[in-house]
Image (cartoon, rainbow, N blue to C red; front, top):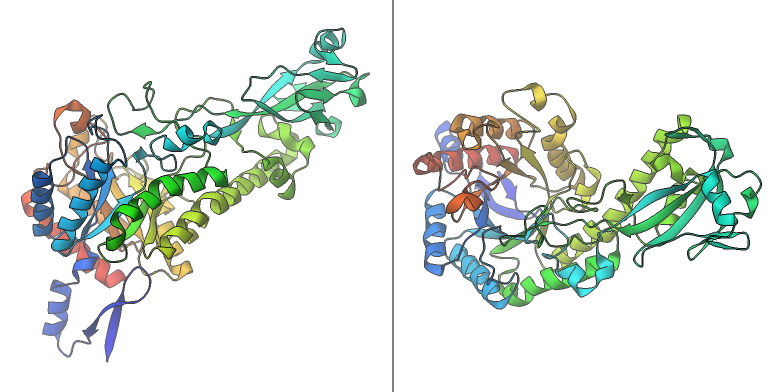
Length: 498
């Protein structure tokens, strides 16, 4: 008799003889398969050198590392163009050297994060592909009166001033009961055409008119070069992940580029593509907006929301407010699944690799059905060994979400990106080996069987690299000479859970 271990697609890794003695059982436990060890993020964050890359990969291998996630990170020189020929040459070199050691590679689909914009190249290809949202502009009764007295009117229509990139989605008239609440039974959708709103149904009542305008969120991602971080002028623009055309551009720029350069390694050395907390609005998006995209009003209605319910996104609409907002968020999630996650999953499967990574929200189990290796993300501020957050609160379920998503979808592996930004707030490099063991046990007891440590730093030269989401939990930490102990422990526990 025998039992089987399975790879990411559910086919056997190899057959292990059923132990006929305690000694053979012990040997199998002490020498688990290489595939079950850690897959750390390798932060490529400095002027890269092939000899140094090889040295580090060999060092990783000697410590029992199973594979690496090739993660472009801030600190790369500005002359190294993301996805350019020199960049791809370094990625090919790392893949080749990892393969020679029997290690696997997971590609990372962004430069740096969150995923979906190809380091701003999607928006450079088409500015209309920038992240989009909806905001509300209110016209009080006296404003309507002034417009009708000859300012911006066309008969019974008022013309709303809009910026060139703005689009009038809808308009609703309603009476306000307080500054932040409306009388729902007074709400009436008004006909819009271009910038114009037909106010003839309310011409005598002069209710407030709420205009719902689609615009760019001005969201960004964190980039890989100096000057491209949050709030900096060159931070790359985030893309509209609800727009299927924008996502097709992302796949063409990123995934096809990797396949054209490294296709020979797909399905053997390269086993997966990692997508990292895609953010519909982008980071540092304009305040007062909700996710939206062209044509989404039809999906708003399909979800069970009337046009008259739009003010409830921004104002209190009584007892129905929570239901309206919930239907909206479910519709957004459904659109994100079909426009972003499903195409990425299909592309990966068609090219012999897995989609792995995690959504933005730690409890979003529904989106994980599109991942061949569903994963989640654990950070100190969400789950801490010094607080009760590991057993209570929203984030306490994140590891179980990934593990259960795998089981519900029939996947054999589920991953967790762990240790990022871990350590006491006043001493981020104070994250200890005991803390790391605590997190591993917290993940294992919830069924996680693939560990993705965040992160091994190519370089800690200068504050930019050393203090960028620390600590390094690998070669630049005091415990590195003993890291093999962690790798072996991870393999043994993953063996029991696979």
